[in-house]
Length: 633
Image (cartoon, rainbow, N blue to C red; front, top):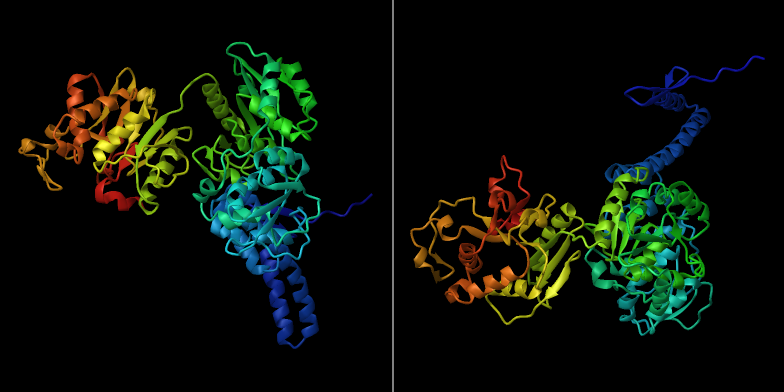
C-alpha cells in the first residue's frame, strides 16, 4: 500500500528556523505578505483580504508562542527574558488577561510588589485561575474608608488562605468588626487563635456587612515592599492544641537523645504538584539522620510510598492513625507542634508549620511567589521556615536535600549556626545601609543567625533577631560595649560594623580556633601619622605616632568566644580617660586587652577592605566607613 510522504521538517542548526518543504517559514510569511500587498495594489481587494486572513491566523498563533515561551523561561528562572516575551505578547494581544495575571505572579516572585499588585486583579478574569469569586454588591474595602463591618472571603487553597490570614491581626486594628469566610477545616485552629474575629465556612451566606475583600487583596493593600511583611504579619499567629500535641509526643515514648521529625513530600496542586514534590528515595540523605524518628505529615493517599521505603531501605515513616492529615487540620497542627522539626515540600503542611512557628526546612520548587519573600533562607511570611529553592523548576532536588540534611542534623544535634552581631540605632531613613549590610550577609551566609543590638525605637530589619537595650547614653563607644556585654552570648560570634558588604561565607568558629578573641589588625595606611586633634578632642599622648602604633586594632570586625571579652573591654573603657567613650574607646580598650590576653587577628585587607584598595584584591568583606557609605547605594 502506497503512503503519502510526510513533508520535510527539520531544525536549521544555528538559526533555529523551521524548514518546511524547502521553504523557510519566515521567508514564506514575507512572500505571502508581499502577495497580499501586490493584490491590493492591483485593486484586487477581495483576493488580498483572503491572503491577509491567512496571515492573521499566524499572528494569533504567534501570541501563544510568546506566552508559552515566556512561561518556559519563567520556569527556568530566566525572569528578564520571560518578561520580554510577555511584554511583546501583551502589545500584540492587549485583551488577553492571562498575560498580565502571569506577569503579576512573576513580579511578586521577584519581590517587585508594586508592579505585581498592579495586575494582580486580572486573576478573576483568567480561565487559569479556578477560585470562585464572591457574588456581592458590597464595595471592596479600602484602608482609608470608614467601614465598620468587613467580610474577608477565601480564595485559592488551604496554603494561600493560611498565608493571607497572617495579616488578619493587623487588619483587625483597622475595622471594628471582622468576619472571615474560609475552608471549614481551618476554623477550629483559627477560632482558638483569633478570639475577636468570626470565622465561618466559605460557602456560608453573610448579610450584615458594609464592605468585603478577597484574601489576596489584603496583601495587595498592605504589602508594598519587602519590609512591610514583618511589619504587618503576625508571628507565629496560629495557636495549636498544646495539650493534644503533648499527648501525641508522649505516645511516641522517645528514647533519650531521640528526635521526632515530621515529613511531607508531595503536593496535590493541579498542574504544578509534580514539580513541587520529591520522592522518598530522593529524601534518603535526610531519612538516614541517626537517632531520628520520622512521622508522616503527608496528606492524601501515599501509603504505597512509605511501604516501598520500608521494604527497600528498612526505614519506617510512622503514622498517627487517629489524625486524618487531610481533614483534621487542627490535629495536623498539633502533630506538627509535637515534632522537633519539620521537613516538607511546598504544600499546605509547610504553611501550617510556619503559622504555628515550628522549625521547618522547606524544599521550594520555585513555583510560588511567597516562598521567595525571604532574607537568606528565612521566609518573611513564616520566620521559622528556612527555604531551600531549586535552581529552576525541573532541576534535581539533590543539592537542596543535601543542604537540608546537613542543616537539620546540625539543628537536631546541637550544632550552631554561624552567629553575627551588629549594633545600630536610628530612624527608618538612617537604616538604609544597615539593610544592605544584612542582605549581603544573609545572601552569602544563608544559614546565619544575625542579631541586631538596638533600642526599642529603632525599626525592625527583616532577617534579624533583636536585642534591645535602652540606655541614657550619648557616647557611641560606651553604648556599643554595654549592649554587647548585656547580650551575654555564650557562643562564638562575629561582631561587625553595619557599613559593610559581606561577599563570602564566613565561619566564626573555624576562624576563632582555640583563641579567646580575634581583632581586626590595621593594614591600610598604617604608617601614616595619627591626628591627635579630632572632633574637638585632644589625644596629645599619641602625637608623633603612626596609626598602627596608636591603634593597631580596628573594632569593625571582631570574633569572640563569649561575652566575657566584651565585659572586660567595657571595664577597661570605664577606667581610661572619659574622652575615649566618645572616640577611639573600643580601639584603645582592645590594645590594652591584647597586651594581657592571648588573641589572634583578622587582616583588614581581607575582612574590612576599603573600597579604594579593591584593585587586585578579593576580600571577604568591603568596609564603606565614613563618607564612603554613599558608595553602598
